[in-house]
Image (cartoon, rainbow, N blue to C red; front, side, top):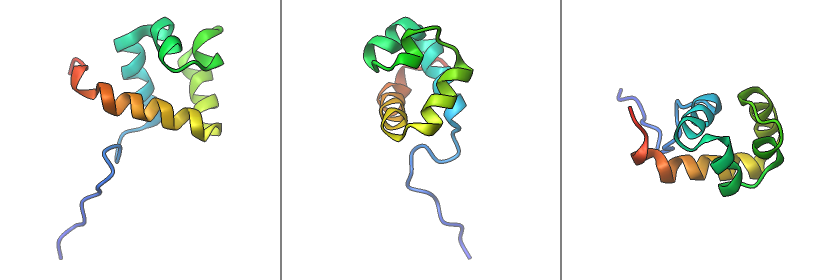
Length: 76
């Protein structure tokens, strides 16, 4: 039997990894301008942002969409 490959481009990528790559690429200041949410604009940290994004689906979707649109620009 062949294994099914997931069609989800985010399959196997944790929210923490997504956030860390975005912060490395943009910094919290620019990230807060692109995705205007409080956890990026007021005392930002990876930990507090993860907590918020895990509880808030609309914000997580925006961050995931930004990640997918920016992925080709990341340094490996």
